[in-house]
Each structure stands twice: as C-alpha cells, then as structure tokens.
Image 1 (cartoon, rainbow over the protein chains, first blue to last red):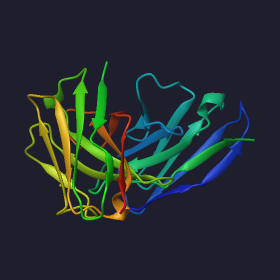
Image 2 (tube, rainbow over the protein chains, first blue to last red):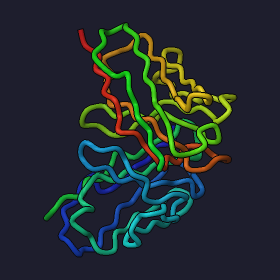
Image 3 (cartoon, rainbow over the protein chains, first blue to last red):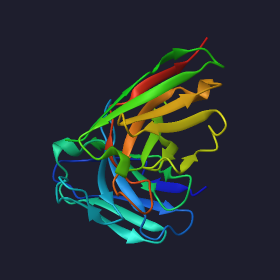
Image 4 (cartoon, rainbow over the protein chains, first blue to last red):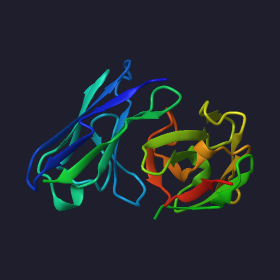
Length: 107
Length: 122
C-alpha cells in the first residue's frame, strides 16, 4: 500500500499566518493527490484535487502544489474558520490511502 | 444540490451483520462511482470500498474483503454496504462519498454524507 506521510501532525498558528502542510507519498503518484479539511463532528470537505486544482467554492487562500512524491498545502492567510484537521489522500493506487492528518490549532 | 444521507448504523455484537444505506440526490447517480470511507473514533480516514457507476467494478480494502460487500441500485439512487462478521476494529463512522469525476481514476471525493455510526460491542 502507498503510505502517505503528513507533517507536521499538528501546528499552532495565529489568524493571518501563512501555513504550510506537507505530504509525502511512499512512491510516485504523479499528481493524484487530494486535500481535505475536516472540522470536529463533520464530514471531510474536498479543498484541492489533482495536487493543485481548487475545488469549486473553496477560498483562493488555499493552494496546493507538488508532483511525484512531495506535495504541499498552503493557506496564505489563516482565517478563524480554517482551524481544523487537514488530510492528504492519493487517488492513483488501490487502496486509496490517506495521511494521518494535520491538526491546525489556534495559537 | 448534491445530498448524501446515510442510514443503518447502530450497535451490533461482534460477529454480527449490518447493512448501511446511502440515499443520493441532486446529481445523475448512475454516472458516478461511489465509495464508503470510515473513521474510527478519534482516528483518521480509511477508504473501505468503491463501486463504479454501472456497478461493473468494485474495489474493496483488504481489511474488510470477504466480509463487506458494496452495491448500488441506480433505479433508487441508493448505495449500500453489507457488513458481515463485524469486529471491534470495524467500529467507526461510515461515510458515503461521491466521486468528483464521471470517468477516469476514481477516488477523489467531492461530496460526503454526514456519516452513520457503527458500534461493535457485546
């Protein structure tokens, strides 16, 4: 199975901060990498697909980059509603696998 | 508006069975692959199973293969997950999820239901 390693596992940041989360695949997945946001008690929400494409309705402060094995999710200016857990997920190999998540907390 | 509504979760004893359902609306159901993804309490997300739009292809995680069966009824816009021989480690919130694209690689989930909780305990 493809292992997806996210870092950091958690971070504390302030409103307005630039936040970067990384995700590394155990082997190349081309650009078949998605990012989801999940708030407590809620279903995940797709933010970025195909590594860098912004899902419809998602604010432009979210962006993704990378290809192959190394990927990044960036929030350009953290907003109060962005405090959540973020997951990366590969959609190239079966089984589809997720990272363990990055919890973004208020500093 | 796309809506996915799961049902069928509950408390079941180890070794028991449960059938989850997901009622879909707001899109052409038969055109999209559908999946089940689960999340154990306090844990991360785990893909469980996917079925193609035509039901011609199914894919299932090794952790549940032989015990769980995914199916769909396109005439009813409904997705199902038959879960047999349930174990304690199957306890989780089970989400149904719609694929973003109507063709190509499956596994980009653009809409999710609210989830249904499965508890496995004696």
